[in-house]
Image 1 (cartoon, rainbow, N blue to C red):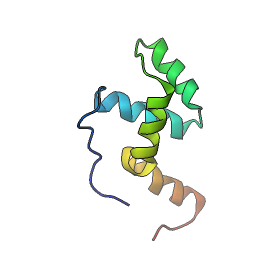
Image 2 (image 1 turned 30 degrees about the vertical axis):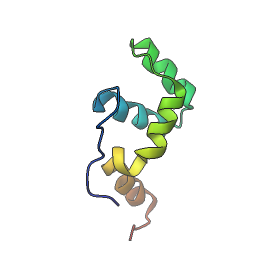
Image 3 (image 1 turned 30 degrees about the horizontal axis):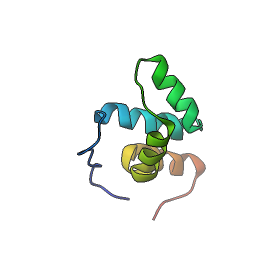
Image 4 (image 1 turned 90 degrees about the horizontal axis):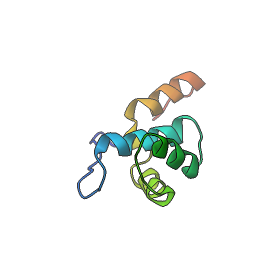
Length: 80
């Protein structure tokens, strides 16, 4: 796993919004459009395509560092 935190340099939105969108997608198994709708309800206008790019680039290992280890412990599998 990459121990460095992801770089949010060059993105239009603050890191908190990006990481929250990625967290919603991975944690609750939502579609990109569902995440887009949830953010729109909070006044954040972002396209589902931007959320898709964030999830692909930043992903679960970079944006949510503790979630991967917690999932491995929960399932009884050890990560190497």
